[in-house]
Image (cartoon, rainbow, N blue to C red):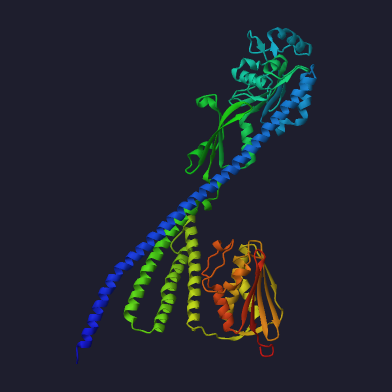
Length: 599
C-alpha cells in the first residue's frame, strides 16, 4: 500500500496545527483588544453616569433651595407687613394704651398661626430731657410700676412702650431700653440712617420665654406727623420711636424647612459679625449627620437681610434623589465589566471555533459554509445565552441562597438583558433561514380572532406596565384562515410589541380584524410616535431602525419588520403601514382566508 497519502495527511495536520497555534495567539490579542475597548467605553459611560447623577442631585438641591428661599422670603415680607401696620397705628394714635395695642393685634391669632413671633411692640425714642414727662404719662395711664431698665444715665433712651405678648412672652421686655444693647442699637441706627426696616444680629430676648434660643428683632422707624424724612438728620429729628417684631430663629427656620417637607436638607445659620460658637444662631437637627454623610452637597453663602449679614450653610444628603438613581453608576460599571468579559470570551471563542471549522472544511462548497455558520449561530450563540439564563434564573429563585437587594437587582437586569439577547439571536436565526430558503410553512386552518386574543393576552403585562389602553375590534364569529400558527403568531407579536414600545405611557392601542371576500385584514393601530413618510419605505429592510424620541430606550436588532414582511409574503399576503409623526401608526396584514364552510 502506498504511504504517500498518509504522509500528505500528516503534513497537512502538522501545518494545520502550527497554523492554529499561530492564530490562537492572534485570537487572544483580539479578545484582549475587545475587552480593552469595551472596558474603556464602560468607564466612559460610568463617568458620564456619575456626572449625570451629580447633576440630578444639584438640580434637586436647587429646587429645594428655591423652595426654602421662597418660604423664608414670604415670612420676612409678613414681618415687614406687621411692622408697617403697627407703625401706622402708633403714628395716628398718640395716646395709645397697652390694651388697645393688644386689641389691634388680637385678630391676627399670632399665637396659633405665627409661633415664631415672640412679640410685636413699640419702642419710644426719648432724649434724656423727655424721660420725666414720659414716665408721668405712663403713670397717668395706670402704669405706675413702669420702669426703664437697665438703669443708668444716658443721653438717649429707647424703652419698650407696648409689647403684645405671644407664644409664652412673659412681658419682661416692657420698659427695656434696647438702645443700651450694642446689637439692638446698631439695628436702630441703621433704620434711622436708611429709613427702612433693619434687622438686628443674633440676640437673646429679655423675655426669656424660650431660654437659650437665639432670636432677632426687626425695627421700623416711626416719625412724628409732618416732620420731613428726606435725610438721616431730618429722620432722627422727627423720630417718634420704632415698631418692632421679635422672632425666634428656631421656630422660624424649623417652620420653613417643615414647609419644604424634605428631611434630606439641613441648615446652619451664623451671624457674620460674630466669631466661633457665639456666631451660631440656628442649626437643624439633621445638619451634622448630613454634613458627615459621604457624597453630601454642602453650600455656603452670605446674605444681607434688612441690612445685616448672615452666613448660611445648606447641606443636602445624597438621598435627595432616589437610591435606584444613586446606584446606577456602580451597577453600570459592574454590568459593563461582566459584559466586556462575556463578549471578549465570546469573540475569542467564535474566532477560534470558526478558524478550526475553516481549517477542517476549507475545501467544502459555499453552501456548506453557510450551513455551518447557521449551525454556529443556533448552537454556539444561543446555547451559552440559554445556560446563562438558566443559572441566573436559578439564583433568582434562591437556589444559591438569599440575595441582597443589590444582588437581586443586578441579576434581574442581567436576566432581562439575556432575554433580549436571546430574542435578537432568534430573529437573526430566522433571517438566516429565510435567506437560505430553509423556512417551510406548516399551514392549518386557524381562527385568527382567537390567535389575536392569545397574543394580546401574552403581552397584557407589558401594556399594563405602560398604563396603556388596549381595545379590540374583532368579529364575534370565528374568522378562519389557512396559515402557519407559529409564524403568524410571530407576526402579530412583533407588531403588537412595537406598538407597545413606541407608544408613550397612557397611550392607546387597537387590535382589529376585518373580513372581506377571499381575505382577512388584521390591523394594529397605536397613538405612538409615528413614522415620517420619507422613512416608511425603508422600515421593512434588514437591520433598519427609525430614529425617534423613544428609539434610544428600546432595544432591537432592526430585523423584526423584515421578518414580519417575509412571513406574510410566504403566506401569499401583504403588509402595509399608514403613519404620521406624533399621531401614531397603523400596520395592516392582509392574507387569504378559508371559507366558513371549509373551516
